[in-house]
Length: 114
Length: 110
Image (cartoon, rainbow over all chains, first blue to last red; front, side, top):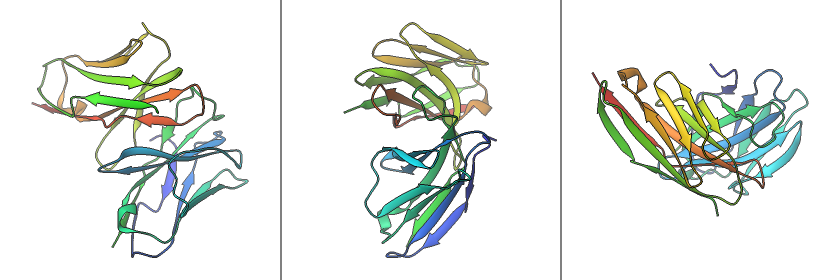
């Protein structure tokens, strides 16, 4: 158990809908990262937050957004969902978000868009 | 653009049959290379971080090594519980994102 929690575990929705994925980092970690894992793309970095502020952006679509709250939990919002958004979404956390730090991953949220 | 390539894509081993997984990378300014293990339907589990060429790290039956262009994960006398997908990721000097390889699926048969 990495100490990172994610809810929900599974999510089934329809195209065009909007969903919110939630992540709670390990105790003491200030930085949160979001990743998408699909069969054809592998693990792709989406976005990083540190202490409430966006720090780095990866391959995140404009339809997706994220935020980190004062209690350090983070939410990833996915809107206007398309079939190809079906994937596993992972959250990871690290103490300060500096490079070379180990990122610890949560169990993931499996999203299925029908 | 950063590139991370892992080979082979899949590996079938008999219990006790040692082997090596390869991770080759192209990145401007490597700050760290990470190895993770991922079981089906679960999040990646951290194994090792390597920072500079020549560095080696060991954990139980696993040993990771790093050169200037690639890293190897050696599995010595594997057991069925070592069956998993092993992921390699690199972190470059600019930015904090990890770039992952496609992974190597390892199956160890008793």
